Amino acid sequence: MRKWTGIAAILLAACGSNGQQQMPPTNVSVAQVVQRSITEWDDYSGQIEAIESAEIRPRVAGHLRRVHFQEGGLVEKGALLFTIDDREFAAAADAARADAARAEARVALSKQELQRAERLIGERAISQGELDQRHMEALQADADVLAARARVAQAELNLGFTRVTAPFAGRAGAALVKPGNVVTPNESLLTTLVSVDPVYVSFTGNERAYLRYQQLARSGGRESSRDARNPVRVGLADEEGFPHEGEVDFVDNALNPATGTIRARAVLANPDGVFTPGLFARVRLLGASQSNALLVHEQAVLTDQDRRYVYILGKDNAAERRDVTLGPHIDALRVVESGLAPGDKVIVNGMAKIFFPGQPVSPRDVPMDEPNQAAAPK
View: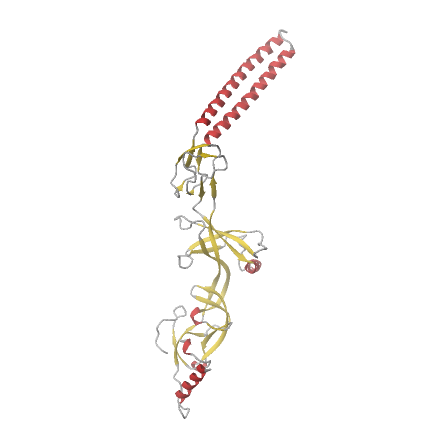
């Protein structure tokens, strides 16, 4: 109440006792409403994930002999990571090869005896039963060779498992078991490995956003991310804006009923290793396209409780209040969904000196995207 009494006193003093004097117009900067076609982007919070990740565990038991990689370093696919003492497995492989050689020798002998029996049966020197027996011995010898070769393959496989290699290219973690320790098959965690380039960024959208995207797809305003690789822009916590570009490659098949959200995922190139799995990221997803959208600078927008409004330059250079409904941010500007018309000039600087609608102002034109630019009065 005291504030408005003081303002009234100033106005009365400016008018003078005879009411002939008027308050001088307030200097303000005005900019014409920008009208252009825009592409809307929706903002989400996401997290960087590796496309491939693995826990490296041994396939055979034994003493760990050596670590062959730099902890935390990059490794190529197939690179040697660990070696396990292989002497026991090498001996088992040699024994299996010897068994296979004996089995092959028995095959050669059984075939010779079968050929001899086939000649003798023609001379009636042996019985049919003896010929059948030779034939079965030859078949059994062939089966023994197959079994022996399988044991050789298993022994050589176990011998190969003493060399633990990288299943894909990526960055290795710490060596969690040091040389000299005994490792247990499929249990002892040796290290972890994550792929580096490209990476995923996962984010979630709420039910309202999901339904809006579905409606846009049905109306042709935007293709569904299930059918098209819609673009995304990504920025990290220490970056300005959204300097990285990627595209959506996955949308989940159902909403989470507990949270009312649905998970989506984009893929990003990471040749320089900027993205590390686990980092949080700001994600901007392609929304709808709109032609002839009206935009104003955020600085021009004022708040009155739950309402947003701007002052425009009205008739006779008077400040007129217009309540507005705002849309998304487009660069430094804000979409105005209702309340303004093309050609309106919005007051973008000096609003603090406007005390009531209809107050006369002295406008100076500035660009909408540079509301604080100095300009000569009209």
